[in-house]
Amino acid sequence: MARDQQPSRRRVRAVAASLAALAIGGTALAEAPASAADSTRGHDVSAHQKNVDWPAAKAAGARFVYVKATESHTYRSPYFRRQYDGSRAAGLVRGAYHFALPHRSSGRAQAAHFVANGGHWTPDGWTLPPALDIEHNPYGNRTCYGLTKARMVAWIASFSDEVRRRTGRLPVIYTTAKWWNACTGGSTAFGRHPLWLARWSASPGALPSGWSAWTFWQYADDSGGDGLPGDQDLFRGSTAQLRQFARG
Image (cartoon, rainbow, N blue to C red; front, side):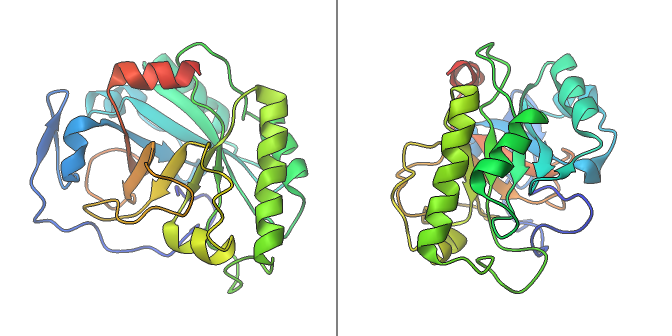
């Protein structure tokens, strides 16, 4: 996911340069996966990207963006509001995401912090549902944050329940198949949540247990060479379908 003060995951090399350039909305998309032809292009950002040129991002092909709002139960991105409002002013569908640190506080507490600091939702067709970024621990070697599989599942359920109670929407879940299957024991309890798959490759590969399709796919990091600030994403569907998804 897009980074703030330090990497939220290990950097990897850019996707293979041999992938053919595709066109989306008349914009050349270098190194994009083949499935991009049936999808809508977007990206995700955090305080690491600071002041984004949103009109330029839209001109380069972006139609949506997820913006980091919070982390754990105390951190608030100092750039969230200008990124969130700036992307909307440029005509992008936008949403907010929360980076989970499950070992620091409860899912309910982190969800409350998230919603209070930008993770809201409104059925206006421009606001994506709140998103939970849950993945390997960037601050230590305890990949699953020291939680058992059962406790991790309970933490995610607590976060989801609180977000839904406060916003009326199930949160999107951002994760990798490897982390999910290792740290939740391959839980199938969250299949109703839209999946935001993280896999920097030419294909999505195997999905985390519980899902049969991805809604969003982060296919490259910010070194992916696709010309958008932050990490590179696709929405599975047209721009019209994206707007409908945002409405709920």
